[in-house]
Structures are given as structure tokens and as C-alpha cells.
Amino acid sequence: MSETNPKEPEFQFLTLAYNRFYDIYDEVMDDTFWEKDEWERFSKIKQAFSIYAELLNYEPLKWVIEKLKIARPPMESEIGSELFKFVRNVVAHFPFFKSWDEVWVNMSLVNWYKNGQTIDKFLKKYEGHKEVKYRFWEPSKKKMTYLTISFPTEYSNDNKVFFKDIITEKEGVKFSFILMRQIMNTQVEEIK
Image (cartoon, rainbow, N blue to C red; front, side):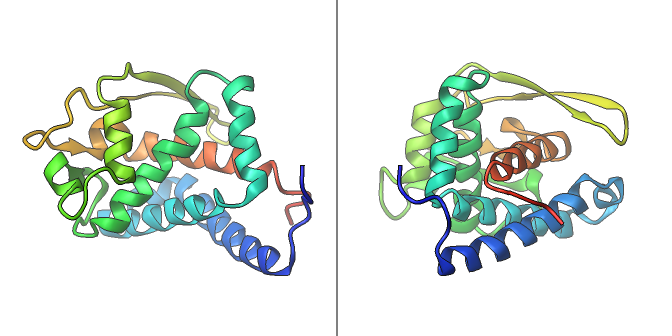
């Protein structure tokens, strides 16, 4: 393995990224966040997914994702990397939507410019994949939440694939943030 201590440019990026992600995380996990209008929620959610996707370029986090493949429940590594990058790529490349539940893609939209890019590869790889069930505990509420991550049964020019059908906004996003934070926290020595 190479040096694990970040160099100055990495440290600067990591500090900004982690601080902003943690701020959004705290906001999303608070019940009042879900009372805000859908555009405000969506804007914060998009920003957090973008930050996380950029953090996945940091080599030690890549090692964590690889370790998840053998040390954690089935599909956790793929959810924590490929699915979350898919979400980030869709909202970055198709910024026309105002809320989580509105976001959709199909094969012709995804490939409007060029076939076989990241979003297309993800949807082809996971088309028809069996659903994955998860749960998460919210200690402050003493509440266990169960959710299902579903993959598109059909990916074609005629079939719209909606975010809401893959992962729900409230429970799915909260789960996503919890998993992202767990992965990110593997690189944190101290939280002030």
C-alpha cells in the first residue's frame, strides 16, 4: 500500500468535502428537513451525492470499497460505489428535474450523445437484478427502518427508469447517507 496520509492538496479537498457532507448529513437526518419543499431537499441531496462521488476518487476510500466486497453483506460495496455514482451521474448530466421523484432516464436519453458511458453501463449491468433489502437504526428516534433497493426490470428506449422506483427519497436517501458516512468515517481520526 502507498502512503495513507493525505498530501496538502488532498487534505484541503478532503477537509472541505467532509465538512460539507457532514453538514448536509446532519440536516437530512433531522425530521424538519423532510418538511422543506422538494426542490430544496433535492438540491441538498444532489450536492451530497456529488461530494461523495468525488471522494470515491481518494485512494484509501477505494480500498474500503474493495474490502466491503468480502467483509460486508451482499451488494453493500456495489451500492456504496456503483449505485451512488449512478445517482450522481444522472443528476449531473441530466439537470432538468426539480425533485427526487421526477428523475428518470431511459436508454435513448442516456445515450443521446454517446453509447456505453457510465450510466448506460450501470443500467445494463443491473437490469433485472434482484432487489436488495436493508435496514437502518436511528438511535435518536429508537427506530428501525426497512427499505428495498430495486433495480430496473427493463432498460430500453421506451421504459423510463425512475429514481423513486430504485430507492425512495426519504428512507432511501437516509440509508444512502448513513452508508456513505460509514464508508467516509473509515478515514477519519477525530470528529470535532
